Length: 146
Image (cartoon, rainbow, N blue to C red):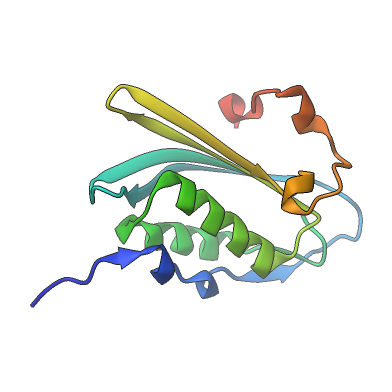
């Protein structure tokens, strides 16, 4: 029996569930995923810390479903660049937030580490650039203390 290789096309966004936002007021949710694992394009495990900054509208992330979604990625063969884009797209589709900022800091591989970021506030991503905190290229200092 041959094992099927799972790719980014097999990532199941229906695993992500939402719950109603308990507030109509603005607030920020920060989520750290310190054990983010997936299979790189060479079918070898890759590891990263993921930092998710979320400004909700009508729905918020049900954390148990996020955990299940992340565990689902462990058997997916995908590049860093493809994965952050698929993850971002799924968050936007499922939750329709005011803003999402997704940062993936990949562990060194071959002596090189990578940091990837997508922010829905960027004009090139359809945003209005109304938050602007990313313009100063400030590192995610909260990641150290979260």
